[in-house]
Length: 151
Image (cartoon, rainbow, N blue to C red; front, side, top):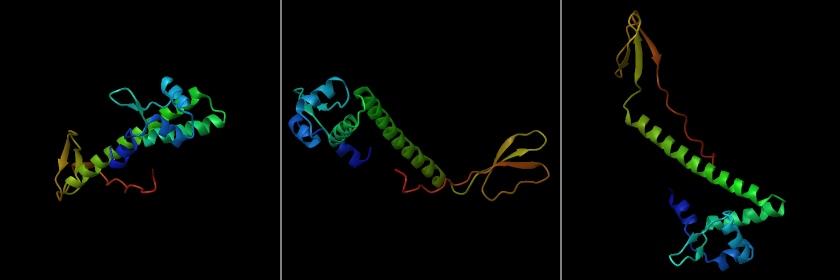
């Protein structure tokens, strides 16, 4: 998790402050918590504490509600947005792992299959394939550079 994501999820706002920031009545925030729409963190004593992400969600709920979207639909939208956020983070992690793996290998690996028996063999960097008996069947290519405009 990145530092800015951790800060965004830090539960710091009491319900009165969160209600004011979201432009809602505190009772509305309590109702949204009861139905699981926007669920804040809790202190040891049980008091609600809202994060910056919760405040943003409350504002989105207010906007969608004003546009006539039902609360169950809003709940599903929030759930899907969270799922997309988690999947994007996972894709970023996997892309970083692939880049690290590719960069850790000196030179590209080439695989070849023998023509007669068909065993697959790994060729070391710089080794040539005997054209009469072996056929190259796969050669890895470097992944395209990440697009900074995606996100």
